[in-house]
Image (cartoon, rainbow, N blue to C red; front, side, top):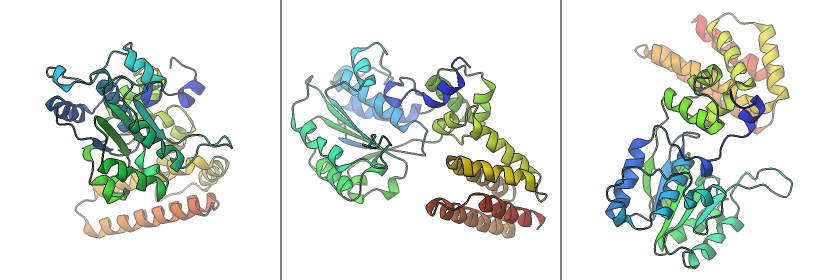
Length: 343
């Protein structure tokens, strides 16, 4: 890799600085065609799995619209790409464009990242859209993500603005789970749905975000395990997360036999770093998904796998919700899997 391992894990480029887009050509063409028509919906709901590039395309759209405020002058344009040295792109990258407002989680007074986008942040919309666009074009608001708006105050304030949008305003709402948003938000937005990326696109996007060689073997392994998510590949690349996945995969491939010593080691690891629980459970879910595909014609076996899926998810959710010990969960899950494998 061209950066140090620590830099790879802690310093991927944020979406506002990422100018490249991989695997979402259809979504880009859809927005561009609508924009060129001059009949632009004022609100877009950019939906899809976490980590696949929703915020990246939102900023890509924002840069393009702010740099090209007249749709009639881009009738022959075939891409939303903007030269990285364009003044608009530079100002967006450093969050200094007067006509762009980004609502996203921020750090609290305790130095920790807040879990929600606060009501105080949402209230900035009135001032932002109540003034004239600084450069005479569009005013753009990116909400990343709408799922994190504080309920109910924060999410209730958005529909009011969407119902009576100011002239030449554009809302770009990112959502990992649009079905959970208020119907009054969903109904006022045009949906732009992104699909999980192919493995090659995950490698290319992650390599750009991290500034590493796309041929790096650790990145290729991470992309293979990332289930179409660039964010997941970045988290996995070359670190303890990928090593844990590989260890769990080895245990799963040996079922119904189990290795108590290795299970103890995994349990201890999950206790030391509680953020790894999702990696462990994700590896098990992927294995179960593979069994679903392999046994697609065996209804009885499919039913058993579906029951296992529910029990794994329920147990993991309880452990995380009530902050329970991780090691009993590891043994319980592998006990269930071993028993099912014998059948």
